[in-house]
Length: 342
Image 1 (tube, helix red, strand yellow):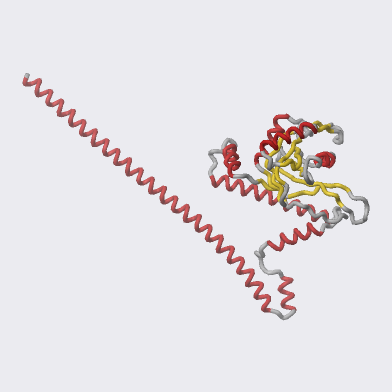
Image 2: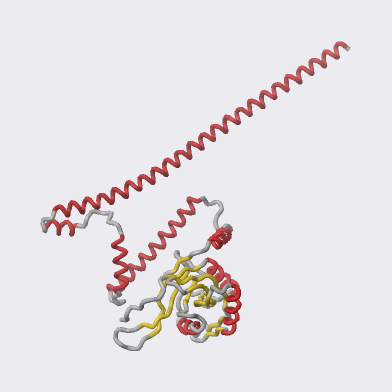
């Protein structure tokens, strides 16, 4: 068991430019299976939220058979850092990244090396360049000294920080422009939204599966009980609405104590919540139904107008054809009369 470590940071925000740079770095190197690419991340770590806004690649070599043997060019880091300071002095060297997809045994030693280039604790950003599942392809870690409860010597370990992707307005425009070639142009807005919702539900299912697996390991005593994690899970369950009937134990407890009013209040509150959700869902479905109905009526109106317009054009062309035919007939009769007179 170890005591809980309080982190100086709450979360990490990553700019899309960083993800594109890491992917470009990985593809240019043509990294072999089992190997990884390494680089430096720049940004701001002066607040509770670490902002990763830029990055650059590093010459890095690692023995595939022994991860403890690796090479990193210190002079290259210093020279590139000085050049980036001239471009944007607000962007500081805050850590490093690699293409993962998971932590490795040598990461703590590489992280210690970066401490002399950063003002505080360097950030390790892992970018999964071959992501197969759903969710964000990034994981952020900071190293901490873990103090054990039994009084033995401390040891260094990585603690995870939550990540999210955020972009400035100019970056959003650039990313949208790049995604035009990736997205299916034939797909409509509704199909894109449904696809995004499906991916979100798959991500939620994966997270719930991780929670179930963790709790099963705790029950089977494969993992120690962590009261912080259990407290977070309890907070999640407390935020869930009670959509079903009141629990029988609560009703039985109130009945045993002679408090029938409490039972009626529980049933009433549960029914009120179900009714409110049903009314809201029905209202939204009604708006969708009316919208589709109006769209169908407008389409039918356009179709009728188009048919009327085509019919008018046909009648006009037919009338012009008849008039031209009569004129030609009159001209022919006049020509015949002139021939007879001659």
